[in-house]
Length: 486
Ligand SMILES: [Fe+2]
Image (cartoon, rainbow, N blue to C red; front, side, top):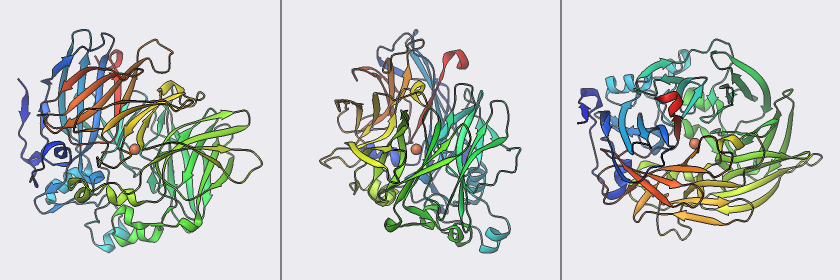
C-alpha cells in the first residue's frame, strides 16, 4: 500500500476545483511514499531506471497565491521503472527550498517568482536582496549529484532515490551572475555547463563550467551587451556555445529595486531586434549575428557545417506567450495567441545577419538524442504539439519530426494534455531514434497522471503507467538509468 505522508505543511488550500485535464493546473498533489503503479501494456525489457519529473505543484497558500503556471512551489516525482519485471513505482516530495520553507511559514509567497511580486520591503531588497530558489523548472547532474533550479543562480541538490532535499549548492568562487539559464548541459564527463547574466549599465553574459566533483564555476567566455535579453536556455554545437538575446530586455534597476514580478521587469523592444552569439569553447572568443526580434525558451540543437554554424530555435514573434501561460487563462482554456515556430538560423562567417529558414510550427519542449548534443546534426526531434487550428488550447499531442524531410508522426490521446516527451535511448544502440519516449499526460477521465511509453521511431504506444494521483503539469524531465539508480 502507498504510504501517504500527511504533513500539515503539505496540505494546501485547494481552489478552484478544476474539471478533467485542467486538474494538472490545480494545487492538491500529496507527498506519496513508494506506491505501485498500474502498468497497462508491455514495457520494453531493457527499460530500467528512474524517471524524474519536477514542476510547480502548489499555487494557493492560506494568505496568498501565485498567479502564473511557472510559479507554484516545486514538487519532485520519481517513477522507478523495471521493464523486465513489468513494474513501476511512484513517489513524490515537495522540494524544501528556502522559498518553500519561508512561504509555507508565511502562508503566502515569500520571495516573489516569475510572475508573482516580491513580498519584502524596498530597503530589504536593497540591503539584502533575495531571489527564489524554487527548483520547479529543470533537473540536471553535476557528476553524480542531482540538482534542480529555476532561472536564478540558486541551485538545490536532491537525492534522486528518495527525492529528499539535500540543500543549497554553495559555489566556491566569486563569479558574479544575477540571472541564470534554467537549462545547462551536463557533458559526457559529468561536467555541468551553463550561462548566467551579470546585470549593470552594460550587462555581461558569462559562460561557465562546473567540473564533476567540484563546486567551482570556471569562466569560459563572456559577451558584453547594452541590454540583456530574457534567458532560459542556450545551445551547444561541437565547438561553440550559442546564446540568443531575446527582444524581451532586462531592466536592471527594476529587477533589483522595484519588487515587481521577475518577468515584469523585462520590456519588449522589437526595434532593437535580437542577436545570436557564438562563444568559442576553445578560447572564449565571441562572434555575433543579428536577427529579427524573437522570444524563445528552447533550442532544438546547434551544429557546425564547414565554417558555418546552424542553430534551430523554437521562436515566438513576441512575448505574449508569457501572459498566455498565466494560471487564469490556462484554467479558463484561453487559446495561446501566438504559435511557436521552429526556425533554423545559418550563421555564416563574413555576414552580420543570421539567415533564417522556417522548418515547422506548433511544436515546443523539443528533444533530440542526448548523444547528438555537441556532436553534429540530429536528423529527428520530438516535441509536444499544439493544434494548428486552435481547436485545442494547450499542448495535446506528441510529435516526431524528421528535420530533413519534414515528415511528422503524431501520437495523441483523446481529450488529453501531453507534455514534454523525454527520449530514453536503448542502452548500447547508436541509432538516433532507437529508444522510447516517456510522456506525462492527463486526459479528462483519468484518475491519476498517465505516463505514455512510446516507441520513439514509430510513435506506437507500448505501455501506460498510471500514477496514484494527478501529477501537476511541469515542464521537463530527466532519466537516471538503472546502473546508477538501482
Ligand atoms: Fe525549459
